[in-house]
Image (cartoon, rainbow, N blue to C red; front, side, top):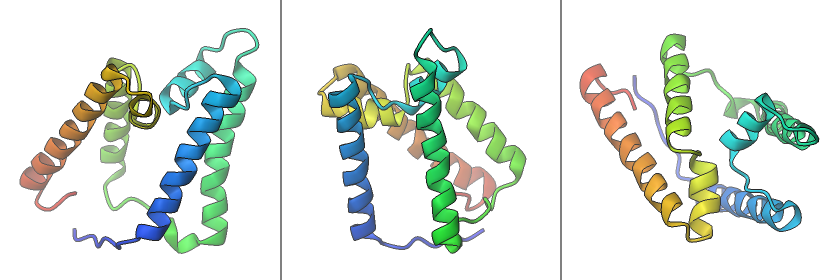
Amino acid sequence: METTMTFTPIASTLGGVLIGLSASAMLVLNGKVAGISGIFGGALRPRAGDAFWRVLFLIGLLAGGGVVALVHPQAMSPSPRPMFVVALAGVLVGVGTYLGNGCTSGHGVCGISRLSKRSIVATMTFMATGAITVFVARVLFGGWS
């Protein structure tokens, strides 16, 4: 299955700036790290008075996808992979997030910007594992990326 990639430096840079500003604002204004897995996990096992902002944050993430689907529907397309592969990938990401005590948003965006050694090592591990996974998937399944 062949996929094409489009080079979008302006949109990508603007997206990165927005992510950085949002993560910085959350840290400065609320004293909280914008790590999606931690926010999601905290919403599943909330402490007293801590669930409301987490649920709103997650609703905002989903609403953002909804806005894109309305404004630019051609940007939203179903996965070219079978659903069982998508589900397995989600489970494996969840396991990795649990084992790594965080995800790329927490470690990669927030941790590296604070020069956390643990986050730098975790992000390097995420990236290396991702590269190896793509390589193996392409070799085993003929062109999957």
